[in-house]
Image (cartoon, rainbow, N blue to C red):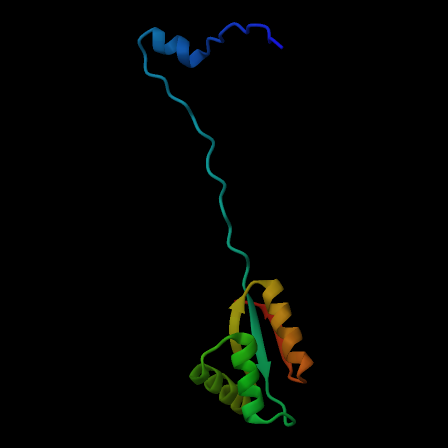
Length: 112
């Protein structure tokens, strides 16, 4: 099968180059990536759960190292609430659900 011959197309870039000027090709601006808004994951104190249990849950779900998990658990115990981390909304909701399956009170709110 043979395709019909297509005549060459002379673009404005080719025309300006043949006339001796420099061709400039304008590229579209790259898309601007906006960071996702942050959501704070807040651990609340309760009188039901054991300190070690809460600390292990913070390590497992918030992925904090042991010293940080202990510090956040102490802060929640002493002041009533502690911010565990700031992340995107979907992950914050997942972490909240994971804590709630263990009977721990965790809320999320837009980060300031």
